[in-house]
Length: 178
Image (tube, rainbow, N blue to C red):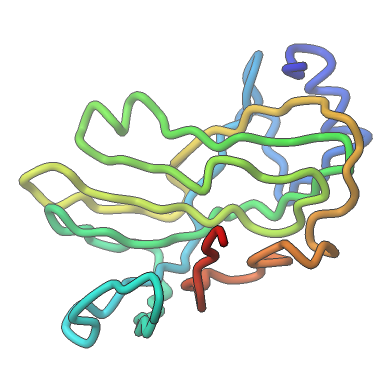
């Protein structure tokens, strides 16, 4: 069930940990997260092919207040906020319409599992024909929260790919169905 209104505000006071928490970012059905200062760009000049069976990814980590995202360029970034979800709460990440209308696609692996701990890692793509200046503190995406049956703390599960998200990481391997 979607957590809204007074229940969402109460959850931030009691069950959902957000640091920093900005009351002004809390809407009726979502919370706007802000862009942090860490970016990770795939060094395409050193990665000739993305092969899911043999990942050999090389990234360039960039720290700064801003990042100029060139047309048709992709970058990973993290939120300013550190988020900890209880075992019975799931969050979904969604881009913001105002940014999408300028050609900026902001997504994440969409689902933050119950028990998630860490920053939100965002996948950002500039589909426009002009550069886009990403600036720390920009409200970059929104989180929508749901009550679910308790499923444990995600960062402790063996199936968790990235565990606690302290910094932006590229995947080391991908999973295949047998």
